[in-house]
Length: 259
Image 1 (cartoon, rainbow, N blue to C red):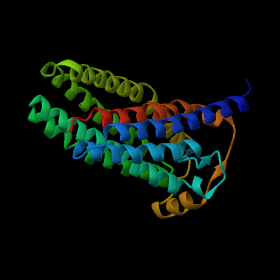
Image 2 (image 1 turned 90 degrees about the horizontal axis):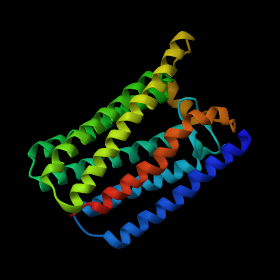
Image 3 (image 1 turned 90 degrees about the vertical axis):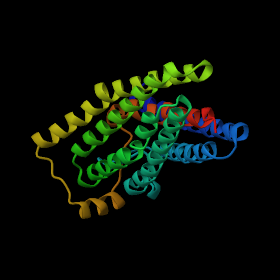
Image 4 (image 1 turned 45 degrees about the vertical axis):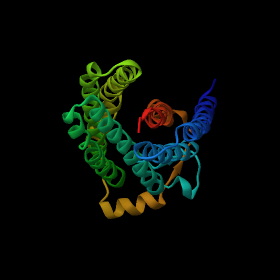
């Protein structure tokens, strides 16, 4: 398979998975619709699913302004704004789920820890926007590090709560702990180092950065359509995991919520 074929196959896979995710979320709504935390979980998950589907059909690489489809909908500003809302919704899901777990396990410390998730990941969005607007990868380094640290905290909380639980909930929490460990490992071994290398390369090559004002105008207007697999391949791993595994986790959180 040539490079063009590899790109088409990868993109087709993203679109197929996004349609499957919409179906899974719809089924979750039909079987788990309720009130309280569950209703909020479904709403937050629905936003995350929809935005990930949008981004699967119109992939972008924000800082470099690359896109697969030359359309106003591929605007970096529009796509990053949608992603910000979606990621805050996911953060809200994790916070609500961890809070609920703390209440079920009778562990107030976990309830308290859950309150730190949304503010920390909101701060991560600020650093992400800094990179997208200024073209400086340092913000991405901080952003991904904050995600890794937050999920490490979640994993620790899950591991601490597990001995207090029984039956199906115990195994769900064990699975959640494993997912958190895998996420942190991926971020520490793949994602953060990738952005560190890009930041270091930018400093070595003295790549120019934009002001926030100029960056905003640039993000709204400039896009570069490219179908070169060499450009998309380094992004494929995290984009694939983001638009598949992360979405499945979002839907799962909505499904296992007990209230």
